[in-house]
Length: 136
Image (cartoon, rainbow, N blue to C red; front, side, top):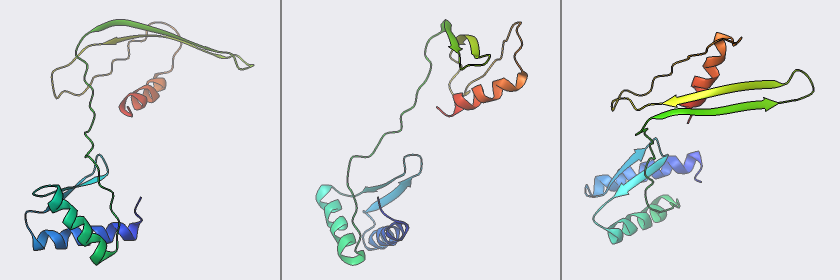
């Protein structure tokens, strides 16, 4: 893992190498935390990696670029049920959840409906559920 100084050297080197040869290109893929380099083939890229090492004294790791993994709901899940029971010495915890999933139109994101029926569940409890869903 390169340090901050190495990252600066790599960025400076990549920019300089692109100025020398416009067929050598790079971009930073922020979502994947990778710098993607492209050129006219493996030999071409190997030469530029060698130049980075010689001129800027930095090592770079080459590998296949990662592909961002995305999930989508394609079908309907009518009812998935889960019961949470945990006894920790006091009153303990209990929760009974029914989950229904349905796909929305492409690009609509997701919609969270809190359909609590009966029981004594504070309205503020749905915030952590939503936060947990978004973090996935």
